Length: 301
Image (tube, rainbow, N blue to C red):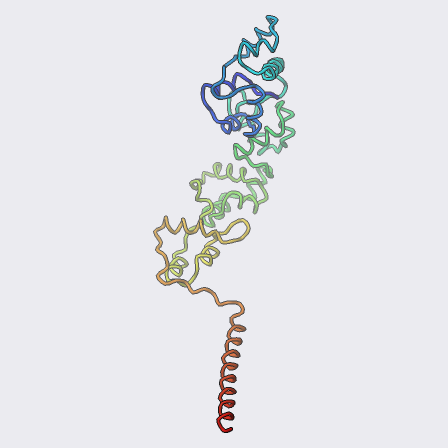
């Protein structure tokens, strides 16, 4: 499970590709990419040493320390590259994600995981990869590993009329429909394509339509932005008002801000505060009366 040193040298020395992009191509974290670059002695501005030349020098009887001196690469890096040359094509290796050599293309994962219900471990065993590589590509291709459900059962649960009602009229997202129907979000997306229902543009799934009556109340200052978000269905998965999404939708629809500031709801302890204020006013009056009586008594003396 070693990356190809020639490929890493090509990306770093010639293409000047950052470690994050290399990690995306190989399905590795940025820290793992830095680790392999350090082990192979590959650094920007370094010397490009093809594997076939390294193997040729080794087979010619040159020691690793001598190869390091001739090429300017650290001896440990030379040994790492020689070890990699012996196992460059193992049963499991790293492949560029999406390349023709990738044993985990998107269509295969869609068929095996989404439609047929194979687990990541089963797919890894069948393709000679690792479950981590399978899960990375599932996340990269945005393929859900939820319950796809048999196709006939899925069509019975989500008829075209039902899907139009949920997706277009109620403006629910594919994950929301999937949770309601007990299937995967990817299965819902495939059903949209099969039924010929146009998908909404990216970023609009979480924006329900704006009710003119509710928006008019907001413009008049009768409701707050949080109350309007709950009323229109702009809520987060946790059930909190999605104020940012609603504000962006209002800006796109050219809805002006409220003419008058909305009246905030009364304080939950407002009645108690009013009673306390009345008691304080009465106490002040009693104190003033007592002072007046004391003043009169002293004047008589």
